[in-house]
Length: 396
Image (cartoon, rainbow, N blue to C red; front, side, top):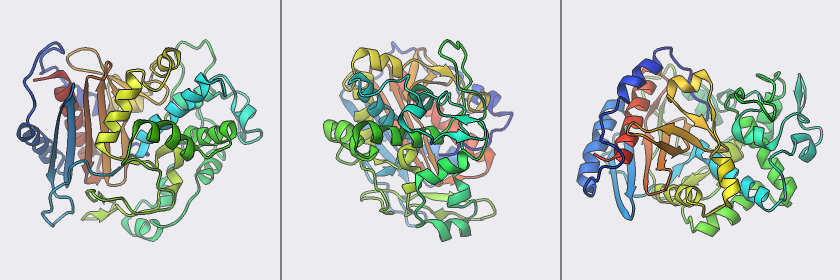
């Protein structure tokens, strides 16, 4: 949920890692076998020095899936097929899709202000809800401060163990954010280069906007409009339930000051709410993004709005070169030309990475267990994952 602090060397290192070494998008590779995919996944797992990695790749109707490493560190248990995962910030894409459906139905407008829907909620310390629109919240151009959630969930292994079952309402994170002045003023309607800063706060507020516009909690709207409609049987909002459904690989995180991993699988994720609490599976994430990108969820106008992107800030640009952000959608250039679409998810113990071609014909969903607070290892893992997504989407 909170991106790691970046190093100045990130951009140069990623540029080397993602140098074009794949054929053009027009190449016609043969079917990718599970054995070949397992070999590619194992190489990335070794580079990342993580505990496990699961990857699902689809080319048209052909699907290959592989899991490498251990489902539970130190046990030798294999990674299950189509495991349940904490999708973290990938949740934002489903929430954004719900908001855009409401816009298509004219139950709200992207130009509505936060003050219109949530009177008095965003005030003080220079924050002004009358200047912030729904579009700003969706695109991270509101300037609203993004508090560090680890202040509540713990920065050390002992802190995490003490707090893993605490119920922290998302509203508390909004309250914390509003004690700070905004990072910058919200973008104007004609601003060609709006300032951008990732803000979970904005998506917590979007959850409240959905409830005001529909009379139902955001989770119920996401379930009815997205999950049930697309038959995403492995996707749910867990609420206060701290357990992941079976099957799943466990997540492992090396906190600062710890020599070994802490198992972070079982935890109350209510605090993440509409910014990152969703549980899903690789199959379901593939089905959702494919439906989204091919127009299965929105009229053309709303889909165009979602895919209208702005540059991210320097911090994110260094870590994910060329990334641009739409309305709950990330865009990043492919080494072979064109773009990949999707959304990343990060949480203590896990990475979730997705990549989809614009026409929805090719997709990659990767989940990794074994996260570290060390910036060098995070950078190495990110380079390897981005390179693998490029390779799978571009073809051999």
